[in-house]
Image 1 (cartoon, rainbow, N blue to C red):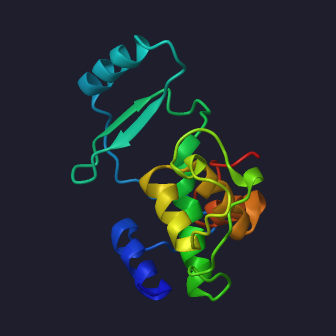
Image 2: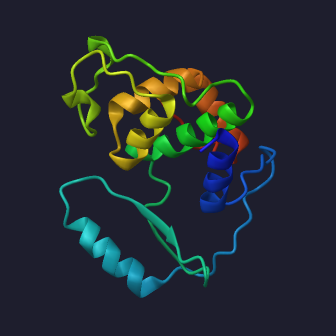
Length: 172
């Protein structure tokens, strides 16, 4: 699949990704929070030995659940989605080639989720392969490599702000 087809597929899944001026508020279709569901989820989360928060919207109805929704939280693997968006944008603009191969070196491997850490140095996946592993197996090695390929943390944070997610930041 060429990068244009891949971008069209991604847009079909995620919807249009149009820049929103930073001063423009995010439009909200949300209606009043679903109090019984919020109470139930809050009770479940309260039983965990962890700091928790939750915000969800039922898209067809606009009903929401919001529990400690303003508490800053580590986003963990959710950062992989904007990396994917930026990589496909860069491929479409000709800044990166998704068929480029990166030879894995011992210093590339990262613990945590994913399968690449189980392979020996010398494997040479394409950027497309790395993106696939980043999403399909939540691979941290692939994430770090693709973050570098798209220009690093600063560029990723700028992209997220451009997309209207300025409160979400990667700190690395």
